[in-house]
Length: 387
Image (cartoon, rainbow, N blue to C red; front, side, top):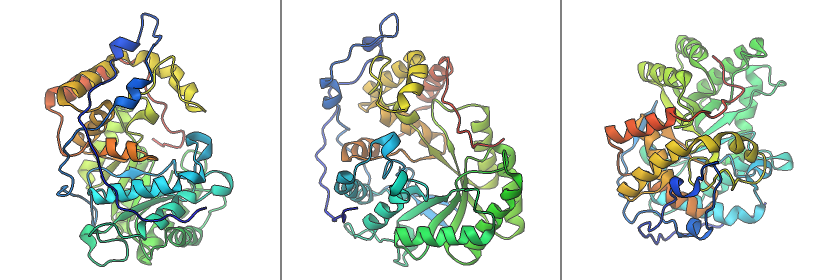
C-alpha cells in the first residue's frame, strides 16, 4: 500500500447543464441509448453552505447529517479498487472534511483477499493528516472531531467477548486512533447461530466499558432483534447510539420503516447505507448500460422497472438544479436518517456534498415515494438482516 499524502482540495463548481432524462433513454422495451458525453457533462450545483453545516446528535457524538462510506476502499471484487487509487481517496477524505463532513463508516472486513482491513488502514492514514482547521481524532475538542464508525464482523471463530475486544483493538491499530467513535456489530447471528449472539452483545459492552469506543451501534438488525439488544444494553448501562440498515427509495419496505420508528422512539440514530441503491439511483445506468461485475445481475432485474422513479428524480433534479443522486440522498436526510453514500472519487464526493444545505418539500417527498411504490421490484435485503 502506498503512503497517502495530504493535500488541500480546491473545488471548481458549475451548475449542471444536462441531466439524464429517463424518458429519453428508456424505449418501449426498456432499451436505452445514451451518449457517453452526457455522463461527463454532469456537474454539481454552484453553492453549498457546508462550512456552517449543522450537526446532528448520535448518542454522545456530534456528526454531519451525511457521512461517507468506505466499502469500496480496498474492495477489488465489487468496486474495482486498485492501490493506484490511494492518492485520490486521500483527496476524497480531505474534501469531505474541509466541507463539514465528519462521519466516516468502515468495517474490519472491508477489503478483499490480502487487502482485508485495507479500508480501515486507508482511513487511518487519511485521518492522521490535518486538513484546514478541523480538529482531528485525538484532539480533545469532541464537537469537531472526526467520527470514525467501524463494524466488527461476526466471524464464526469470534465466540467470546474477549475476541471482540481484540478485534476492536486491531481496528484501532489499523485506524491509528486511541478510541473509535462508534463500534458497531456488522450483523446479527440470530438467524443461524443464536448462541453466538450473546458474545456479540457482551463484546460491545466490554468495548464500551474499557473506553475503546465512545459509542456503540448495530448494523443489519431487524425490528425485533433491535429492541432486544437495546433492552440488553440498557440493562448493562450501555446506550445504543446507532442502527445501520439499507435504506433508500429502493429499500423502503415495512421493516425499514418499522426500524426507523423504533429508532425514533428509543433515541437511536438511523444510519442509511446504500442510499443510492448500489448506483441504480444515480441515473448513470440503464437496462442496456450496466455496471461491470456482480452488480450487473441485480441491475438487470431491477432497472427496467425504475422508469417512474428515475423520471420523478430527474424531474425534481431539473427543477431544483440538482442531480439525481443529490435528490435521492436528500430524501434519506429528510426521512431523518444519516445517509452514508460510498465514495471512491473526488467527482463522487463533490456530487454527494450537493445533497446538503437544502430540503425536499413535502410534496416532492410524496412524489418520490409514490413513484418508488410503482417500481415492480425493490432492492434485495441483506441476507444477514434479522427480523
